[in-house]
Length: 71
Image (cartoon, rainbow, N blue to C red; front, side, top):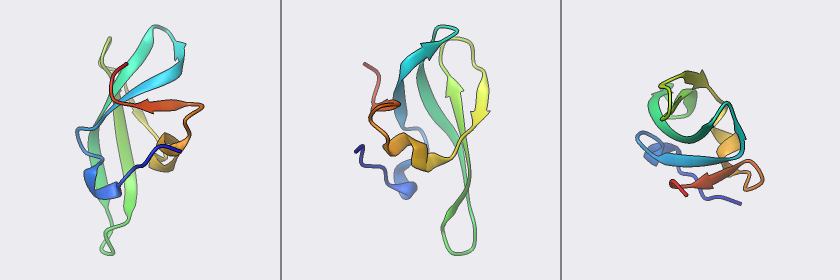
């Protein structure tokens, strides 16, 4: 399991295991929190084409889908 801290999500880098449309390397560009400091929105950007996606940040914990950093 990848260790992911909600407070350190912003600007973190990720590598997707299953590459689709040459989108392999991603960065977290926006994280919104509620009043209890729980993540309510997480936006990830593909580095190759700048496409942005809303994701559930907890999916980043799955090592079958994501690796931490750019590899």
